[in-house]
Image 1: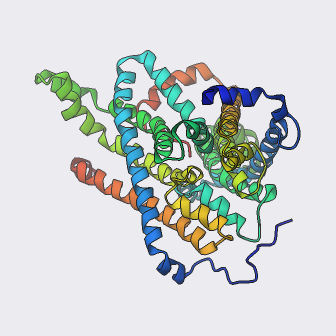
Image 2 (image 1 turned 90 degrees about the horizontal axis):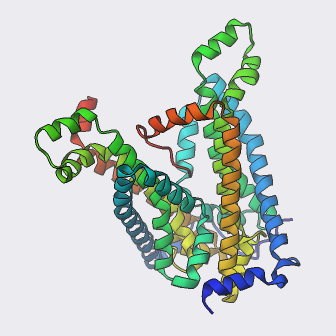
Image 3 (image 1 turned 120 degrees about the vertical axis):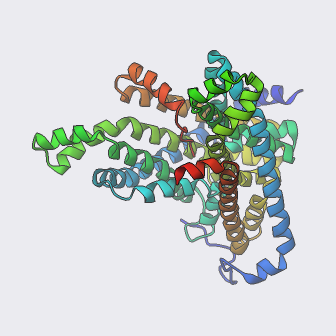
Length: 227
Length: 238
């Protein structure tokens, strides 16, 4: 039996201009926190994935271990991870960032590996023949050519992270999730819940488009060859 | 005492293993809600996926649906459904969880049927099979490894999302986490987290084994898959 809503007697619209108008500061602040948590988590994830992927590429044995461990982290439900971390790191943004960074690793490491593996052997060979050293080879030849696949991973990681930030509300740091949670506890305030959820989806779409634009900008040669 | 020791102490305390708030009862609820939701999602998604795959139609819709579903915050959708006439509690959780389980099942089963080798299909037609026979005896059996992959993704995701259902009045192991946070009992919160993580890992491993059993010629295929996976973008789970 569905419980009767406590607010059925008073109007409880799904969208409300008054809500947007009166709470624009709170909505902006929550959106800002949402963006910050996402950017920090994905950036940290990318920073960690690079060396992990390079290690996995260099030592075949480590590849299984690294993909296994990142896959293990990926399987742990976010609420469970926050629940285990919270007693140690508290109800802070740190708890959310540690968890979300962990979730980005699997996709990012896999795509960095796939991107590097997709670099044509002839190109690497030609660069070596021209006397390019290992560090320059990686930075000037391999990573640029792997960029489209790496950025595809960043897009997937970013979109998933935007959605997952909301769960951070259980440790009081959930960006727009905070508003969703608040609306629920505040007499099931529909306008607040729906607005925050829609903003969340919008944020994911905008982030995806921005990253797509970045990819086009950084790899002009890919467009030219497609023509 | 450290939080790790507190958590272990909480987990081994017999008082926490009996009654409505006890681990076995909460675990039972969690498994039941997950099982019912995944089963319902299979009943809805698989026939549609098989039919669309057989006809080779609707591919972009199916794939876009599953991509778009990644951007929808499950937490928001769960709470949104709770403030509709569906209400909250375990029944509402089942409705929400079924919705979440559909995209991975649909996409994998669809691709599994669609990507059956055209030569195999032609051979079956040449043997005089009707469309229905082709689907039942050739396409669906050949799609089973991918169907199992979808089942695995969907189930792990539902175990995770079922945890959140505790925040909208549902039962399950999420109750331990929600109540632990609510009462300011970190050992209870962490114990709930550990139990949910273990459950998710067990489900993942069990279904990974099932997927392997359903994939014929595993060894040869794995070698080939390894070569392929290093050359293509791996499709991430939702």
